[in-house]
Length: 147
Image 1 (cartoon, rainbow, N blue to C red):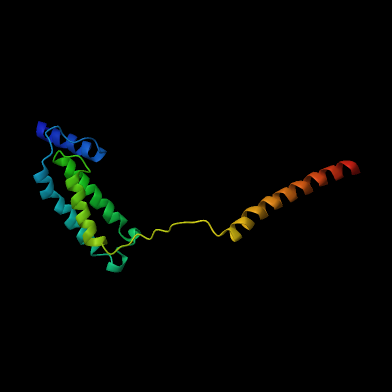
Image 2: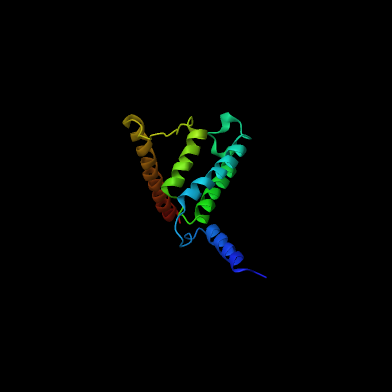
């Protein structure tokens, strides 16, 4: 026998897992802030399985991070809040500071090579294309004359 309360929980869980909007009752920020640390604690426990020098290599802990993100989303939606929201983002940023503060973003700014390298890299293929086209045309005309 299904009770209305049980049906509500099933609907709430389904909506949360589908990323739908939270219930109409409003956002209970105090409860959300009380629940999010559970997600952080679980993530911290899982990260302790990863060697510290691998914490900047996303492929080493992506599954743990995905679980952490999903947990924060579900906990936020359960208390009627949207995800992400400024409070949840602040919590997530705190977790980032705890684990990833020493990770730098290696970002390369690409720039064109110097002209003395760039010009030959452009002109040689263009000239080869023109030369090969000329050879093909000359060869096709030469073949027609032989027949």
